[in-house]
Image 1: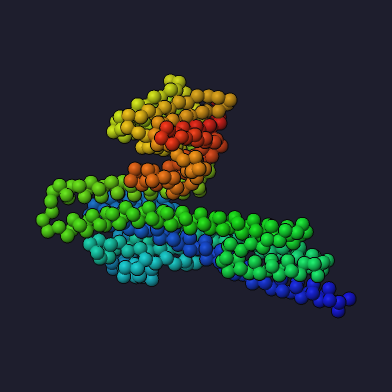
Image 2 (image 1 turned 45 degrees about the vertical axis):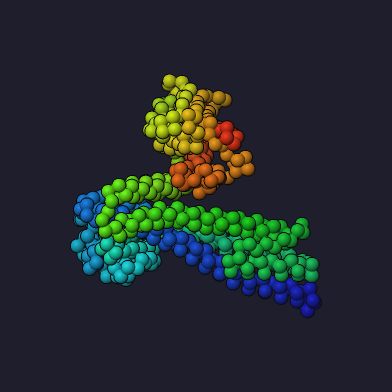
Length: 467
């Protein structure tokens, strides 16, 4: 029986498929592991560089101020943070003086590299502590290394995620292998060509070609498997593109103001006899760029926080008071454009929602209505209850949004037209935050806009407790 061509082909293809899938699984698991760990390193290196800049700016403000900055930043990034001098001695430890390492000298290779001006991130395994990522970044002052910022972050959760993904992939590959084995023995001659295409596609994807598609449209199991593979490939490719785009745009948005600040500072330093007016103008511009960086980092941190924390801190508050507070806070911008702001809302409009996030949402929408409005324009803000929902509407008489761009305005780092630029205050993060907040409240947001006539945002949120 086993000497027949059918069985020979079946067994041969079975062995080939098992081998290819094993190798592909090995490379895929290795690629995913490297992908997760590299992203973790990049994330902490980015955070460490931000703290390094903050530390450099506050070197002359005393240990108390630096200690407060480092301690607060340690909580934000969920990592132990050390500030070390050029001799390797720990000056500040976020764990405090009693529990920390202050006064001790560290001889880690990461610290030694950072003292030489080279940032370093390395993973270690510590007994009774598990997997730990050490990140060391130099602190530059007056074009020399003044010290080192070091992060010590537990990555046990990352390792657990990788392990879980590995077992999931192994399970999936075993499942696929079983299906292919059964089909191979049943219809070896018929599935010879599709299996070849599928194995080649898996191998290409394992090497990192996420654009690989099988395109087998038969209705049998192999066809279904191929469609599932194509769907998986499409989702992986889409996610990979979004991730690369997000990282690239975030890097660009951070780099642009820093470049501007550097150019202006170098211009001031090169002036032998600084002119007071020019110096003041440059310092004003530098201050604006720092404000831009602060807003960007704040929005990025808020997006990151919302990605991790999906629970709402609901409290009962007056939505009308919140709207009036937002308008009062943004009043200078309204006065600058001589805008007329009309608020149509009941005096006692109690809602049960997350106050901080609703405030952030309303502030972003009103800020957009002010910034992208015309001089002497009108902004209408109203809220009401309708069908067990709270309906918030914000309309302006501004420049409007092209119809074809409306579907993309809630994506991160998207600015849909030249008039909505970073110079006018936009990073393309505000509306992304708005959408995250609305969806977190299980609501929806609608947009209507006409070029040169205005835009209306309508937010519909479930009226929990009052509905």
